[in-house]
Amino acid sequence: MDENQRLSMLKQSVYPSDVVLDTDTFNEVDDQFALAYLLRNRDKLRLQAVYAAPFLNEKAGTPKMGMEKSYDEILRILRLAEAPEYESRVYRGADHFLKDQYTPAESEAALDLIARALLHSRENPLYVIGIAAATNLASALLLEPAIREHIVVIWLGGSGFHCPEIEEFNLMEDIPAAQVLFDSEVPFVQLPCWGVTEHFTISRPELETWLIGKNPLADYLASHAITSVEAWAETPMWAKAIWDVPAVAWLLNGGQRFMKDRLIPCPQITDKGGYRFSANRHSMKYVYRIERDMLMTDLIEQIVK
Image 1 (cartoon, rainbow, N blue to C red):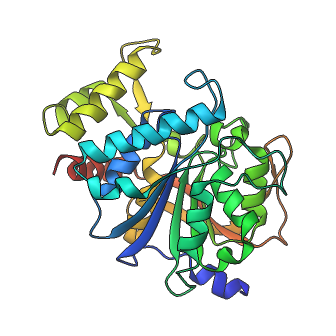
Image 2: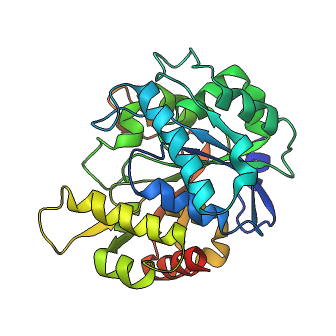
Protein backbone atom coordinates (compact mmCIF):
# COMPACT_ATOMS: atom_id res chain seq x y z
CA MET A 1 0.00 0.00 0.00
CA ASP A 2 1.54 3.32 -1.04
CA GLU A 3 1.33 6.51 1.04
CA ASN A 4 -1.66 7.94 -0.84
CA GLN A 5 -3.65 4.73 -0.46
CA ARG A 6 -2.77 4.51 3.21
CA LEU A 7 -3.80 8.08 3.95
CA SER A 8 -7.01 7.74 1.94
CA MET A 9 -8.19 5.37 4.67
CA LEU A 10 -7.99 8.16 7.26
CA LYS A 11 -11.50 9.40 6.66
CA GLN A 12 -14.17 10.45 9.11
CA SER A 13 -17.95 10.31 8.79
CA VAL A 14 -18.08 7.33 6.43
CA TYR A 15 -21.27 5.75 7.75
CA PRO A 16 -22.05 3.12 8.68
CA SER A 17 -18.55 2.10 9.81
CA ASP A 18 -17.49 -1.22 11.31
CA VAL A 19 -15.73 -0.65 14.64
CA VAL A 20 -13.98 -2.64 17.38
CA LEU A 21 -13.04 -1.19 20.76
CA ASP A 22 -9.97 -2.15 22.82
CA THR A 23 -10.41 -0.95 26.41
CA ASP A 24 -9.03 -1.29 29.95
CA THR A 25 -12.51 -0.53 31.21
CA PHE A 26 -12.00 -1.08 34.94
CA ASN A 27 -8.91 1.12 35.13
CA GLU A 28 -10.70 4.49 35.16
CA VAL A 29 -14.17 6.04 34.90
CA ASP A 30 -13.79 7.27 31.32
CA ASP A 31 -13.73 3.98 29.36
CA GLN A 32 -17.31 3.38 30.49
CA PHE A 33 -18.38 6.70 28.96
CA ALA A 34 -16.58 5.85 25.71
CA LEU A 35 -18.25 2.44 25.41
CA ALA A 36 -21.64 3.96 26.23
CA TYR A 37 -21.14 6.67 23.59
CA LEU A 38 -20.23 4.04 21.03
CA LEU A 39 -23.30 1.96 21.86
CA ARG A 40 -25.56 4.99 21.56
CA ASN A 41 -24.28 5.66 18.03
CA ARG A 42 -25.06 2.25 16.60
CA ASP A 43 -26.75 3.78 13.56
CA LYS A 44 -23.37 5.18 12.49
CA LEU A 45 -20.79 2.97 14.18
CA ARG A 46 -21.47 -0.76 13.88
CA LEU A 47 -19.77 -2.29 16.89
CA GLN A 48 -18.27 -5.65 15.91
CA ALA A 49 -16.40 -6.63 19.06
CA VAL A 50 -15.00 -5.33 22.35
CA TYR A 51 -11.57 -6.37 23.63
CA ALA A 52 -10.50 -6.32 27.27
CA ALA A 53 -7.01 -4.85 27.58
CA PRO A 54 -4.50 -5.48 30.38
CA PHE A 55 -3.54 -2.80 32.90
CA LEU A 56 -1.52 -2.65 36.10
CA ASN A 57 -2.05 -0.20 38.95
CA GLU A 58 -3.59 0.01 42.43
CA LYS A 59 -6.81 -1.51 41.06
CA ALA A 60 -5.13 -4.60 39.65
CA GLY A 61 -2.07 -6.38 41.00
CA THR A 62 -1.18 -7.97 37.65
CA PRO A 63 -1.93 -7.14 34.00
CA LYS A 64 -4.04 -10.31 33.82
CA MET A 65 -6.13 -9.17 36.79
CA GLY A 66 -6.64 -5.79 35.12
CA MET A 67 -7.75 -7.48 31.90
CA GLU A 68 -10.20 -9.77 33.71
CA LYS A 69 -11.70 -6.90 35.70
CA SER A 70 -12.07 -4.94 32.48
CA TYR A 71 -13.79 -7.91 30.83
CA ASP A 72 -16.37 -7.97 33.63
CA GLU A 73 -16.85 -4.19 33.48
CA ILE A 74 -17.51 -4.33 29.73
CA LEU A 75 -20.29 -6.84 30.35
CA ARG A 76 -21.73 -4.58 33.07
CA ILE A 77 -21.93 -1.62 30.68
CA LEU A 78 -23.52 -3.74 27.94
CA ARG A 79 -26.24 -4.86 30.34
CA LEU A 80 -26.90 -1.35 31.63
CA ALA A 81 -27.11 -0.13 28.03
CA GLU A 82 -29.59 -2.92 27.24
CA ALA A 83 -27.26 -4.27 24.56
CA PRO A 84 -27.04 -8.00 25.41
CA GLU A 85 -26.51 -8.89 21.76
CA TYR A 86 -22.88 -7.81 22.11
CA GLU A 87 -22.05 -10.00 25.11
CA SER A 88 -20.93 -12.89 22.90
CA ARG A 89 -18.51 -10.53 21.12
CA VAL A 90 -16.49 -9.52 24.19
CA TYR A 91 -13.01 -11.08 24.10
CA ARG A 92 -10.28 -11.41 26.67
CA GLY A 93 -7.04 -9.72 25.71
CA ALA A 94 -3.44 -10.38 26.68
CA ASP A 95 -2.61 -11.35 30.24
CA HIS A 96 0.80 -9.63 30.07
CA PHE A 97 2.46 -6.72 28.32
CA LEU A 98 4.90 -7.20 25.44
CA LYS A 99 8.40 -8.15 26.51
CA ASP A 100 9.87 -6.58 23.36
CA GLN A 101 8.88 -5.20 19.94
CA TYR A 102 9.03 -8.59 18.24
CA THR A 103 7.11 -11.03 20.42
CA PRO A 104 3.30 -10.82 20.41
CA ALA A 105 1.09 -11.62 23.39
CA GLU A 106 -1.39 -13.95 21.76
CA SER A 107 -4.97 -13.72 23.01
CA GLU A 108 -8.59 -14.17 22.00
CA ALA A 109 -8.75 -10.44 21.30
CA ALA A 110 -5.70 -10.34 19.01
CA LEU A 111 -6.87 -13.36 17.04
CA ASP A 112 -10.40 -11.98 16.69
CA LEU A 113 -9.02 -8.64 15.49
CA ILE A 114 -7.00 -10.40 12.81
CA ALA A 115 -9.98 -12.44 11.63
CA ARG A 116 -12.28 -9.42 11.46
CA ALA A 117 -9.67 -7.21 9.82
CA LEU A 118 -9.11 -9.67 7.00
CA LEU A 119 -12.82 -9.48 6.15
CA HIS A 120 -12.33 -5.77 5.37
CA SER A 121 -10.42 -3.83 2.73
CA ARG A 122 -8.72 -0.51 2.02
CA GLU A 123 -12.01 0.73 0.59
CA ASN A 124 -14.03 -0.53 3.56
CA PRO A 125 -11.64 -0.69 6.54
CA LEU A 126 -12.28 -1.88 10.06
CA TYR A 127 -11.85 1.01 12.51
CA VAL A 128 -9.92 -0.07 15.60
CA ILE A 129 -10.39 2.26 18.56
CA GLY A 130 -7.77 1.75 21.25
CA ILE A 131 -8.21 3.43 24.64
CA ALA A 132 -5.69 1.39 26.63
CA ALA A 133 -2.13 0.15 26.39
CA ALA A 134 -1.61 -0.95 22.78
CA THR A 135 -0.79 -4.56 23.75
CA ASN A 136 -3.67 -6.25 21.93
CA LEU A 137 -3.36 -4.04 18.84
CA ALA A 138 0.40 -4.45 18.55
CA SER A 139 0.11 -8.20 19.05
CA ALA A 140 -2.36 -8.50 16.18
CA LEU A 141 -0.04 -6.49 13.93
CA LEU A 142 2.90 -8.70 14.89
CA LEU A 143 0.95 -11.91 14.36
CA GLU A 144 -0.41 -10.82 10.97
CA PRO A 145 1.25 -7.69 9.51
CA ALA A 146 -1.06 -7.81 6.47
CA ILE A 147 -3.95 -6.44 8.51
CA ARG A 148 -2.45 -2.96 8.31
CA GLU A 149 -3.97 -2.73 4.83
CA HIS A 150 -7.43 -3.52 6.20
CA ILE A 151 -7.72 -1.33 9.30
CA VAL A 152 -7.47 2.21 10.65
CA VAL A 153 -6.19 2.52 14.22
CA ILE A 154 -7.45 5.36 16.40
CA TRP A 155 -5.37 5.30 19.58
CA LEU A 156 -5.61 7.44 22.69
CA GLY A 157 -2.24 7.64 24.37
CA GLY A 158 0.98 9.56 24.83
CA SER A 159 1.36 13.26 25.52
CA GLY A 160 0.88 16.23 23.27
CA PHE A 161 4.05 17.13 21.40
CA HIS A 162 4.19 20.46 23.25
CA CYS A 163 4.14 18.80 26.71
CA PRO A 164 7.31 18.17 28.71
CA GLU A 165 5.58 15.28 30.50
CA ILE A 166 6.08 11.92 28.79
CA GLU A 167 4.82 9.57 31.50
CA GLU A 168 1.33 8.97 30.14
CA PHE A 169 -0.39 5.80 31.38
CA ASN A 170 -1.44 4.04 28.15
CA LEU A 171 1.98 4.53 26.57
CA MET A 172 4.12 3.80 29.63
CA GLU A 173 2.21 0.61 30.52
CA ASP A 174 3.53 -1.03 27.34
CA ILE A 175 6.22 0.96 25.56
CA PRO A 176 7.15 -1.88 23.15
CA ALA A 177 3.51 -2.10 22.03
CA ALA A 178 3.43 1.65 21.34
CA GLN A 179 6.68 1.32 19.40
CA VAL A 180 5.15 -1.42 17.25
CA LEU A 181 2.07 0.69 16.61
CA PHE A 182 3.96 3.84 15.63
CA ASP A 183 6.39 1.89 13.41
CA SER A 184 3.82 -0.34 11.68
CA GLU A 185 2.76 2.19 9.00
CA VAL A 186 -0.86 1.27 9.67
CA PRO A 187 -3.26 4.17 8.93
CA PHE A 188 -3.11 5.82 12.31
CA VAL A 189 -4.75 8.58 14.35
CA GLN A 190 -3.23 9.63 17.68
CA LEU A 191 -5.22 11.43 20.37
CA PRO A 192 -2.68 12.50 23.03
CA CYS A 193 -3.79 12.50 26.65
CA TRP A 194 -1.66 15.13 28.41
CA GLY A 195 -2.15 18.50 26.77
CA VAL A 196 -5.08 17.51 24.54
CA THR A 197 -7.82 15.13 25.71
CA GLU A 198 -7.15 16.02 29.36
CA HIS A 199 -9.20 19.15 28.61
CA PHE A 200 -12.34 17.07 27.99
CA THR A 201 -13.64 17.24 31.57
CA ILE A 202 -16.90 16.93 33.46
CA SER A 203 -17.79 18.12 36.98
CA ARG A 204 -20.02 16.81 39.76
CA PRO A 205 -22.75 19.46 39.16
CA GLU A 206 -22.87 18.49 35.48
CA LEU A 207 -23.05 14.79 36.27
CA GLU A 208 -25.83 15.35 38.77
CA THR A 209 -27.78 17.75 36.54
CA TRP A 210 -27.55 15.96 33.22
CA LEU A 211 -27.24 12.25 34.06
CA ILE A 212 -28.59 11.32 37.51
CA GLY A 213 -32.13 9.94 37.25
CA LYS A 214 -32.23 9.73 33.45
CA ASN A 215 -31.75 5.97 32.94
CA PRO A 216 -29.81 3.08 34.57
CA LEU A 217 -26.77 3.57 32.33
CA ALA A 218 -26.62 7.31 33.01
CA ASP A 219 -27.06 6.70 36.74
CA TYR A 220 -24.18 4.26 36.84
CA LEU A 221 -21.81 6.45 34.81
CA ALA A 222 -22.47 9.47 37.00
CA SER A 223 -22.46 7.77 40.40
CA HIS A 224 -19.37 5.71 39.58
CA ALA A 225 -17.51 8.82 38.43
CA ILE A 226 -18.51 10.87 41.48
CA THR A 227 -17.64 8.12 43.97
CA SER A 228 -14.32 7.36 42.30
CA VAL A 229 -13.15 10.94 41.96
CA GLU A 230 -14.17 12.03 45.44
CA ALA A 231 -12.06 9.24 46.91
CA TRP A 232 -8.95 11.17 45.84
CA ALA A 233 -9.99 14.72 44.90
CA GLU A 234 -8.16 17.35 46.94
CA THR A 235 -10.88 20.01 46.64
CA PRO A 236 -14.67 19.98 46.24
CA MET A 237 -14.33 22.02 43.02
CA TRP A 238 -13.10 19.18 40.84
CA ALA A 239 -13.47 18.42 37.16
CA LYS A 240 -12.64 14.93 35.89
CA ALA A 241 -11.07 14.24 32.52
CA ILE A 242 -13.00 11.59 30.61
CA TRP A 243 -10.14 11.21 28.19
CA ASP A 244 -11.37 8.23 26.19
CA VAL A 245 -14.56 9.67 24.72
CA PRO A 246 -12.76 11.74 22.02
CA ALA A 247 -11.30 8.53 20.53
CA VAL A 248 -14.83 7.40 19.67
CA ALA A 249 -15.84 10.92 18.70
CA TRP A 250 -13.11 11.15 16.07
CA LEU A 251 -15.22 8.89 13.85
CA LEU A 252 -18.23 11.17 14.39
CA ASN A 253 -16.24 14.32 13.74
CA GLY A 254 -17.72 15.45 10.44
CA GLY A 255 -16.43 18.90 9.58
CA GLN A 256 -14.06 18.68 12.56
CA ARG A 257 -16.85 19.87 14.87
CA PHE A 258 -15.61 17.95 17.93
CA MET A 259 -11.84 18.24 17.49
CA LYS A 260 -9.10 19.47 15.21
CA ASP A 261 -6.44 17.25 13.65
CA ARG A 262 -3.66 17.52 11.10
CA LEU A 263 -1.38 15.26 9.07
CA ILE A 264 2.18 15.04 10.37
CA PRO A 265 5.16 12.68 10.07
CA CYS A 266 4.64 9.87 12.57
CA PRO A 267 7.31 10.03 15.31
CA GLN A 268 9.12 7.05 16.74
CA ILE A 269 8.66 6.09 20.38
CA THR A 270 11.90 5.89 22.33
CA ASP A 271 12.67 3.18 24.85
CA LYS A 272 11.84 5.67 27.61
CA GLY A 273 8.46 6.57 26.12
CA GLY A 274 9.40 9.87 24.49
CA TYR A 275 9.17 10.97 20.86
CA ARG A 276 11.85 10.99 18.20
CA PHE A 277 10.86 13.14 15.22
CA SER A 278 11.95 12.76 11.59
CA ALA A 279 10.57 14.36 8.43
CA ASN A 280 11.22 11.12 6.53
CA ARG A 281 8.66 9.08 8.46
CA HIS A 282 5.26 7.97 7.17
CA SER A 283 2.31 10.26 7.95
CA MET A 284 -0.36 10.00 10.61
CA LYS A 285 -3.21 12.17 11.88
CA TYR A 286 -2.54 14.01 15.11
CA VAL A 287 -5.42 15.48 17.16
CA TYR A 288 -4.31 18.74 18.74
CA ARG A 289 -7.51 20.32 20.10
CA ILE A 290 -10.83 19.16 21.57
CA GLU A 291 -13.97 21.29 21.18
CA ARG A 292 -15.12 20.45 24.70
CA ASP A 293 -18.59 22.01 24.84
CA MET A 294 -19.74 20.70 21.46
CA LEU A 295 -18.60 17.16 22.21
CA MET A 296 -19.91 17.17 25.79
CA THR A 297 -23.34 18.25 24.59
CA ASP A 298 -23.48 15.40 22.10
CA LEU A 299 -22.19 12.86 24.64
CA ILE A 300 -24.85 13.76 27.21
CA GLU A 301 -27.63 13.82 24.63
CA GLN A 302 -26.68 10.35 23.41
CA ILE A 303 -26.38 8.81 26.88
CA VAL A 304 -29.76 10.04 28.11
CA LYS A 305 -31.78 9.28 24.99
